[in-house]
Image (cartoon, helix red, strand yellow):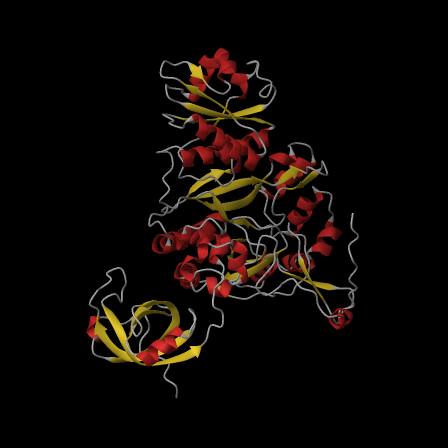
Length: 592
């Protein structure tokens, strides 16, 4: 039986001096000193060990090898004359009696230096991801992901949840994003869909009598990439509870997440339960976002009334929002750069002015604000040294651009953002309906499976014209951490009559509901318990814990921004025989 090693490359210490050992790994670096003497750094999954080559034969073998070849080293541990206190194995070295080549690297040069791979072009990193993952800094994120998933599983099990896997091949359903479709060979012209989420299946489990369900669920959505969203597939901590309300869901996550964030996070401070709850309308009004970063102490204020008639055309007749930074030290160049970034991100150009030490207004649009200085001072509590950022437009656009401005100012202005902590909050009371931008008609705002606050009563009032449908709120909630939406969840609409009435509001009748959601509708007709759930994104969670800005840094084999796996060559063409078996005909796109 082949004994691969006696120790790992991070294991040997002074206590092992004099022992005969065998270590294996990648030849990370070679530093030659003379013709028959060299220092070799050997790296495995666990760490590094210095090997000292002192014979002509071994020197010849080492010289013939390219870096990143895998080798086996048998030898004796001895104390290093020149110790390296920065390394766990920095007090010892191994003097080999035998070196064996296990896997030769056949390339003289690498696409990038392993330990500096994060500095390389992203396309190169993704193409040679197996080399990129050899970098201990990259590998560390994947190890963190494994540890977090294991901790989540343990915590959910301890809370009485059963881990149940749901189907990957299922039916296409309207859930907000594009489906990935899979042709059914035995059923020509028909398709399976990869699940955007296990939404219907987990609700069906509740109707089946399972009380608490969870899984680390793979989800598939054909959508564009962002910094916090990977195209193609992602994973979420999917959970559902029977005979439960919103508070039950909150209690579980408020107990599960803070210890995990405190233990594994870059920062060891995390919000304690209960997390702050903010109504959606209040979040948009005070923070300009439905995912506010509560580490920032700045607020958004409405100054629409105060600035009307000021003479600045861009503000007239618009919703106008302001963000005030007391004692702002930003220079003009920094202000201009910040305003440009806000405009790029929000498509709305922000304006600004300052309050000088003598109380006069200066800079930006100050000359237009002089006439309303007294009203603004009272509304915004302006003091000498204050900086005021201003956005204007239709209400929603003005709010969102003010939210971007708030985030930029909080990060740029010293003392207004406590970066080294995890600040959670719940966003609650989302609108049930909205007017669609394209249709101009009433549409579901978010999740059509959510229970409206007030149940059937509010739907009937809206139907009778006694209340505006836009004033109906859903029993829906988002979990937000440091300005990142970790999850959406809801108390589900488990009553078929309420479900039909909710869909009738958007011009869909009972037959439409039965056709789109046959299994769930029928199951609810057999007696369904009230149930609620949520699904925090594992990828986003680990990204926050690792302190990374891009979600691709914590995924073992991520796609690029165009949803391509350039390492494996996916998506790719397939043989005509495969297409024929699936009854698929590929037509070429006509060029414009």
